[in-house]
Image 1: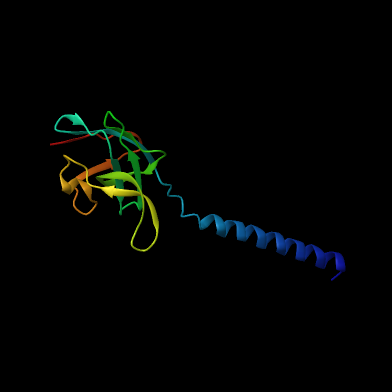
Image 2: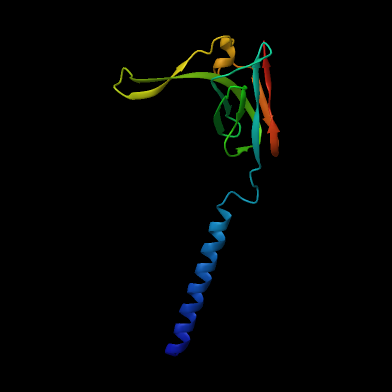
Length: 146
């Protein structure tokens, strides 16, 4: 075998190895199944009146995602960005700028506080019965609480 033939064989083997590496990496991307996404916005009312402060929290163990949005004076919210489609538990939280340090010495600019006039069951992920099943595209999810 000449030096030229040996060089061509090594070059061809390197090219084949490179192509196989690329193909195997492409297969590691999770397959052909792509996640689908949704946007979500809506309004929260309590006894027919807009909830003028607080946050709405979307959380899903099923899709492994969550997001939070602040409520405006009209009780409206809009989640920034997209969420994977699927079922979400929805709960509400209050917040207060406190600028306090907790018992472990960690500075906490915000403290979660109860929302007045909102049933406690809606204020925790473990007790809420508010849900949203997000579909592909734009979703408007309103909640009218009593």
